[in-house]
Every structure is written in C-alpha cells, then in structure tokens.
Image (cartoon, rainbow, N blue to C red; front, side, top):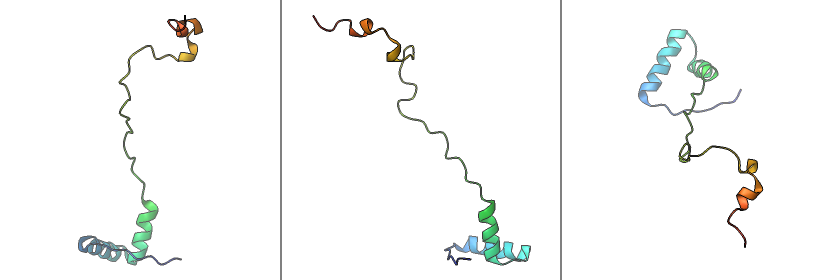
Length: 75
C-alpha cells in the first residue's frame, strides 16, 4: 500500500473523523472507500460556437455535380 497525505479544511477533517468513528474504521479506510465509490460527474454538454449557425441543405459538396461547382469559373 502507498502512503498519501491530504490537506483538509477543518470542516472536512471533522466530518472525516466523525464518519470514521460512526463506521468503526480508520480515517484512511473511510477515504479509501469514498474513492472506490466515487463516480465522476459528466462535464456537461460540449457545445461549439459554430454549432447550428449555418443554413442550407446540409449535403456534402462531394455529392454536387462538378459542372455546377465550376459554373462561373474560367472563360
């Protein structure tokens, strides 16, 4: 097992001591159980600034006829 030190504010330190006493376990075991039980929360929806700002049919330029794409270019 690896030793790790934590800095806790007074309120959290008191809560940890209380939980350890209630559970009849060491403070270290309470911390280990809390870490094992921890489930990260989703960070929320990732929205991008340009999402949804364009208008049009939404097709790909690869689907367009080459003559239509070149219309107006050249002599």
